[in-house]
Amino acid sequence: QVQLVESGGGSVQAGGPLRLSCAASGYTYSHSCIGWFRQIPGKEREGLAAIYTDADITYYADSVRGRFTISQDSAKKTVYLDMNNLKPEDTSMYYCAAYSPPMGCLKWGRYDTWGQGTQVTVSS
Image (cartoon, rainbow, N blue to C red; front, side, top):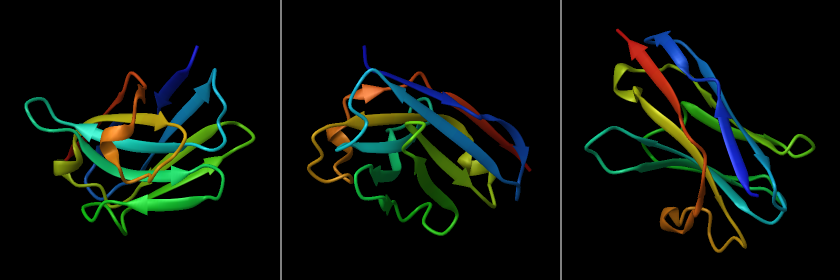
């Protein structure tokens, strides 16, 4: 059974950092795209960053490039999202998702396996 489990969410003050983790199990981790998304209730889900697991190639949405960094530990089948200089508008539920075989990691609509999400709250 394919499973993605996010962790690391919490409350942080504006300007602070936070690291999210996404642990994958139950599928072939290699040759896939794993991405981070966020969604505020009532708004569309937003793709933030993605990584192609075979080659460590990373992709970013303009809204987070330079502040967020996606990385992986392939031995642990875990993908991380390091978030820096957090702003109150970053407050959201954050999800990781995967799809395979990869046909472009920025094709946000192709992600079909989702974790349960982890809440990030940034206070001013």
